[in-house]
Length: 74
Image (tube, rainbow, N blue to C red; front, side):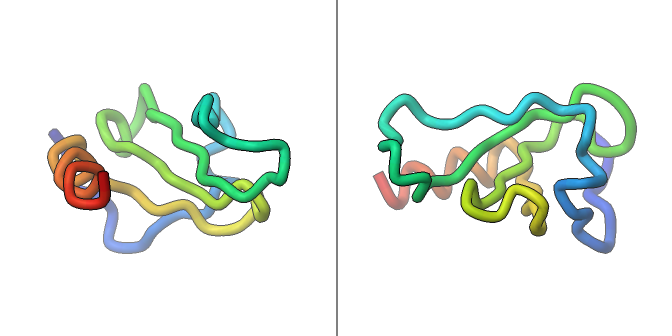
């Protein structure tokens, strides 16, 4: 897997991804969205953004880091 970039791109830089929202989300738009870039240097990473600011920054996680995070908060 490629190393993550040194700077975190904004969600605008991830325009080719399909953002998904949890089925547990309410209509209040207070949740996060995730996407998996399929191509380029971000392939294999998980992108996470705030659904209230879809044009704002997206954070990138390796699959292992995201699994650790969700296990810790779940």
